[in-house]
Length: 250
Length: 306
Image (cartoon, rainbow over all chains, first blue to last red; front, side, top):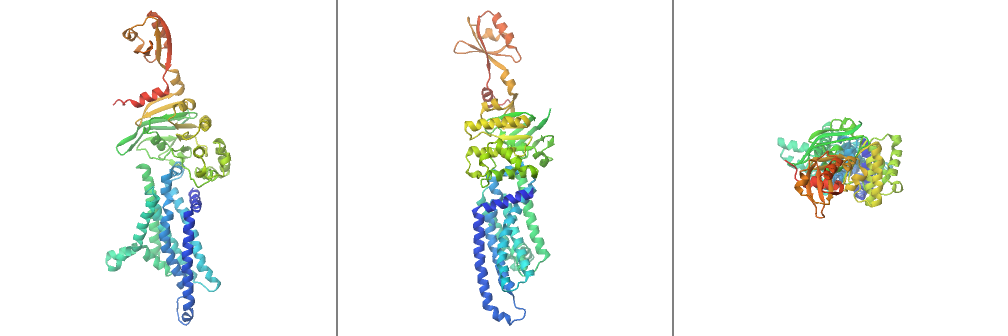
């Protein structure tokens, strides 16, 4: 059942021009960054050749590329996730799911996985850029995998927050704005951490950015993984609870 | 009897106002229930509760013997529901949409294609399978909504105003379809078109302010003559008429006739004998059937007795 809902969600995203334009825009901008980084690398390559322990292709091209991709996805995910549930609430199509023999958990997971399938496509396309470097050089696959994993988990977190906020309102625009608010807040919450106090450490831990940065350096720390999985689980549970309550309170 | 749905003492409140207040519904196989009531009486709320779209705050619902609140997944297999606004994904084609509905309702893989074909055929959608739902006319969209509700061959079909927005030909087709559904399943049908109930349904239930105010078999309701029109050669006074044992109420109409309301369960023949025996020269006696419309208006405009 989860698969049925997920595949409909995945296909329906590809039916909307919004999703295609988002995919197009993100590819265009990332390709530009990729080219600029490649250009920089070519300029500094002679000097790097003489240095011991110098940063390689992956550090100079893939890492900045994925770093930029995270920022763009933060800006674009809310636009895509805003309709996930609010559209169904507004058009009344949600009752099709509610009448069917599927649980709320299956509905939410199905929608979430369908959406992540779409995200996976856009990450796959992004990944092709650094992979194209294999034509003329070699890559640090471990580091690349860490970057990709970090980007995927970060986007998965964006999406979990997006689906929750989309379940709060029948107005997609409000869902988008709400999601922006939460994502940006989680991104910059560590600005307050500069003080180094106890609360500062908490803010730093809460910040999406600080966890993402470790992964960009190729560090897969279990605390970061737990942080992402925790956030995703919490927001998906909140979505399920919220929709169940909606059936009760309404 | 093969009870397909049994809802007892349903209760639901919105804010402080009770929308559904102690409602009972019971349907057996072969029943087509016309569910009537003025706007805001709680019809849609009741239907949403019966189909698991809204949790009741009190009462129990059993679909096919399975408790909807305790075992929702199992109970919902036997349910098909067309809400007031058909739940259509406008960017899917009719075929895609119906096969999604079939898969969602756990139709076994090998039978999905058949199920979709049959639902399309029954709802007259065979020619539009490849078209986008968003581009179809209102009538066709309504039919897709009905097809969605019956694609998995549910034992109980709940239709909230299924003939709204259809032209007279389409209405006839849909009514025919509902009659066919009623042969094997149970159907609950809400509508504002009262003749529709008389042509399609075998039972009628009128609700007002969340309570049942009338419930009858359509056949009974036609047989019961509750008012008689009479005319005499020599007019008696109203008091004379009321003093007859069998007469509960009498009224003089403008055209020289009287309207009599006998006590319930009085045979008309007994009343006729009395009228003849009174020697006023009975000239005319016409049993008047109260139409569903009269019953509806009478029951839903008066204030309920506190």
